[in-house]
Image (cartoon, rainbow over the protein chains, first blue to last red):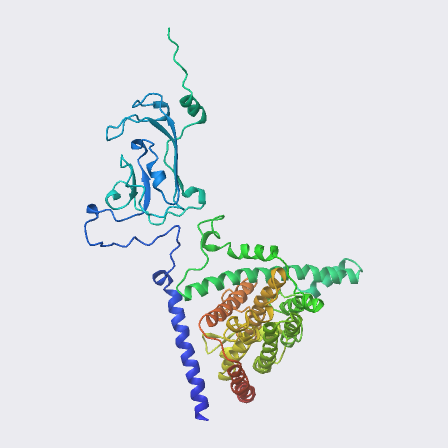
Amino acid sequence: MSKYFTNIYDTVSTLWTGMRITWRHMMNIKRDNVTLQYPEERWPRPERNIGFEHADYNVIRSRLHVDIDDCIGCLKCERACPVDCIKINTIKAPNRGEDIPEIKHTGVTSNDTRKAMVVSRFTIDMSECCYCNLCTYPCPEECIFMVGGPNNEKHNIDYEFSEFDRNDLIYQFAKSITSEQKDTLKNPIPEVEA
Amino acid sequence: MTVDMLMDWFAAIGDFPVLAFILAVTISGIPLFLVMALNAMVAVYVERKVSAFMMDRIGPMGQGPGLHAGKWGLLQTAADAVKLLVKEDTVPESSDKILFKMAPFIIFIGAFIGLAAVPFSQTLQVVDFNVGVFYIIAVGSIGVIGIVMAGWASNNKWSLYGAMRSAAQIISYEIPAGLSIIVPIMMAGTMNLQELIHYQSGSVWGILPNWIIFNNPFSFLAFFIFFISAIAETNRTPFDIPEAESELVAGWMTEYSGFRWAIFFLSEYANMLIVSGLAVAGFLGGWRSPIPGLFDSGAWGLFWFMGKVASLIFIMMWFRWTFPRLRVDQLMHVCWKVFIPIAMLNIFGVGIWKLIFG
C-alpha cells in the first residue's frame, strides 16, 4: 500500500520536474533560441587556417570571375572548359586597339594587347561549373580567374551564391550591347570619301 | 443571450413559433461557430509558438504580410486554413463511403452542441440548462461514435486501431471525470452551470476567492483528477495513443484530408475549450473575478472566463510538450487503479466535509 502512494508521489514530483524544465526553456527563449532565420540571418563565416598565407597561394575556388576589359575574345577558356559552361560570342572590332565609347569597349588591355574582337556575350553558367580551374590556365591575359584567396579584397568571398531563379546562376560578364549596335559593328557604315 | 431569451423576444413580436425557433437557433449558432473557428485558429498559433519556445525554436516567423507568414508568423494559421480548404478531398476506394463522410459531421456535432452549454459570462450562454454539467458530459461522448465510425469506415489498420484505442480511452476516462465533477455538484447542490458559478461568489479565509477548488482538500484533488481526465478525453498528449504519430500515423484521422480533416481539428480544439470551460465553471469560479469584488460584473465576466479557459488550455499545451506518451496499459492503470479510487474517496470526503462544516 505504501508503494502505491510512493508511486503517485514519484509520478507527480517527476512530472513537475519536467514541467519546470520546459517552463524554463520557454521563458529563456530569447537567450536559448537556436533557430537562425536563414535568408535574413547567417552564421558568421568561420575563420580558417589553410597552413599558409592567403596572399601566397590561391587555393580557394569559390566562383569564376572575368575582368571583361582585359578579355580579347580568344575563346581559349571556352575550349578548355570540360563541361562547356562558358559561352562566348565575339564580333570583329572595326579598328583594332581603339575604344568604342558607345558600348564601353576598351581597345587595349592592361597587358598592352590591342584587342581585335568585341566580346558581345560572355556567360558562365555557375550551376554547371565543376570548379576544375582549367579555364584559367590558358588565358593569355589572365582575365578569367577564381574569386577567393588573393582576390579577397577585390571581390567578396560568398560561399552561398544561391539564387531564387536558376537563370540567375548564369553570370553575364560581357557589357550589354543592343542588337542595333551589334548590327553596326558587323556592317560598319563605310565612310564616304569626299 | 440565450436561445430562450431570443424566443421570448420573437414571441413578443408575433406568433410564429417554428420560424422563431429556427431564427433563434441560427442567431445563436453562427457566433458559436465563429467562436469555435477563432478558438481553433488562435489555439493552433499559440500551440505552435509554445511548442517552439519549449524546444528552443521560434516557430512560425516572417517579416511582414506576403513574406513567409506575416509578422511573428501571425498569418500562419490563416494560411493553413486556406490550404486545408483548397486541398483535394480524398475518399479511399475501399472505404465505407457513407460512414466515412458522416463521421466528421458526428464529431463536429458532438463538439458544437457541447459548446452551446458553456457559460461564457452571466448572459452569454446559448442554452442555460438546469442539467448543464450532465449535458456537457453526455454530449461529450457523442464524439466517440464519430471516431469509431471514422476508424471503421477508413478500412485501414491504423485508423481502426486508433478508433479502438480512442473509444477505450474516452469511455474509461469519462468515469473519473464524471466522479470528480460530482464534487462541485454535491457542494453547490445544482447541475445548472450558472447557479454553480453563483455558488462560488464571495471569498474564503479572507483572501482566496470562494472557488470550489479552494473550498476543501477533496475538491482541490478532484479538480486535478477532472482536468487530467479531461485531457485524456480530448485525446491530447500524454494521452494521445489514439493518434500516436510514431505508431499509428494519425490514428483514426489517417485517411482524411482537406476540409474533413479540418473539421476534426476544429472539433479537437473546441473540445479543449469545452472541457476547460467545464473545469472553470465547476472548480475555478467561472466568470467570477479572481479577486472577489474587483471587476466582477458585466463584460468582465467574459474576460475572466476566457482568461481562465486560456490558462487551462495553455497548461494542456504545456503538458503536451513536456510529457512522453503513455502506454495503453499505463493509461488504463492510471485510470482504473489511481483516478477512480481517489475520485470515489473524494466524493466520500466531500460528503463528510459538508456534513461537518457545511
